[in-house]
Length: 293
Image (cartoon, rainbow, N blue to C red; front, side, top):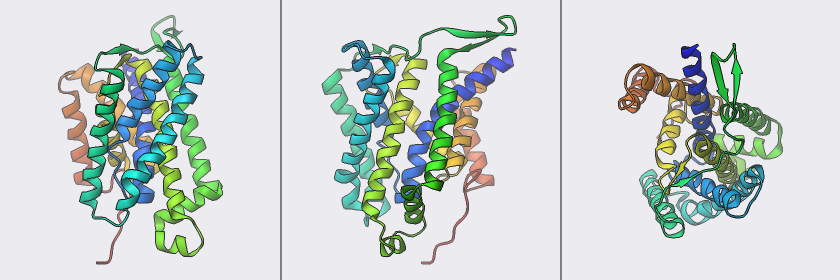
């Protein structure tokens, strides 16, 4: 049962990585941009939820909804101000801008909320489900995290495949020029992609801080990097790949902490990523594409 407990903990952590990775993979798949400020949007969402619940007495779920609204608006603003002017710029310019935006959000958070750690209130309480006469314990936040990830994956997959906006996103991903000639508003589609990814980041921030309650302006930095790793692991640009990569990364990290070393767990995670990319450079579910130059 100890092994099963570790496995469930890994699935829970991986579910958070998967939700974050969806934001990375959607933006890259459609806009071909790496939004390294995404981890800091997670942090903003967590702070908004924290203050809504602890200071203003919001219901935790209403706090998450408010955080989603704020982060969705933030995602649109960041895209319009930082990324839209660089739509035709070299990749290096976009990368530097993303890193700059990340530092801007972190330092703004320091000014607004200080660097003092804050204890995040759980959105669902600290109880647990006891199974097999107590041999297996699944916390409420673990069950909520896994359930939320599954629901988000199903809804997002249906949205991308069935809705008009989802089809526009797929068209922009294939060829922005052709999509524009067919009457699709490419700029609005990319802005909506940032908005959806940022809204998901708010959910991930609330779940992350409920599971690991310490909240600081740098809270989203390391999970953001690991979620980006999960997106690459599964095949960046692939929504099922982000889901699979996040789950596998979480399980690997928890087992590495349990059976190898908590200090070496990150090294094990990135080592596995290197091996996978050496064997399958496009990631587990990614596809190799050829570009004419």
